[in-house]
Length: 290
Image 1 (cartoon, rainbow, N blue to C red):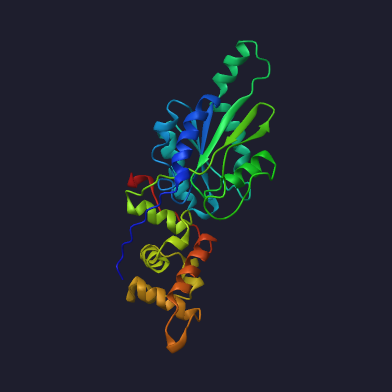
Image 2 (image 1 turned 90 degrees about the vertical axis):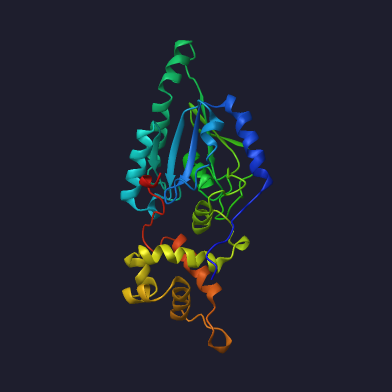
């Protein structure tokens, strides 16, 4: 199989989002960026720091329950060295979110003090929440605001338009649509986003994507991955990734007429199980690669 596919995506609302963020900056005091703890680089908009200028930023490493905890700790240290507070969280379960409001207040201490010094007894400070599609913004908003008005759906691009939410008596939060660059100059970035479901599968060659994912799993197999498909070490070493895809399909009984193996079904199965965390905790990007 040709191991390359050119992953590009040009949704018009991404350009609109940039304008919305720029227009909203004057209304807010801190930017909260949600990224995927498994792919912190690929799931972060590369233009965001330039876009938000001097506004303070807090990073939430979401889906930390699906990432390698040791690597996540390295990422937290990496951000700290670069002057950014990063918190590992899981927005669906609420894990780690008890640290969110204290972290925001810590970032905004001088702002609170300045407003109180001006005689404002109960200053209200405002946050803006940003993140690429399917990274967990709506789950976060529902958890942190204790409401269910934000639509949560496990597919990219369901959040449209801006909404304000009250977090506490002194904190309000602005939601924005998902942020994603319109062209993937680095194909590895596009692949990582596709692996984790940030790009819709139906615009991709799912079998080729699975082959490339299996390239990674062959080099760093988890015990959970091998157990799911009853694979041994020789299965991994003796087969190229396309043959391994067929072997997985065969082991799960995905046969079609003539004894052929339905590799498309096998590919979809692999990503369903990976995204459900059934292969163990896997991080695909490391700070030392930067």
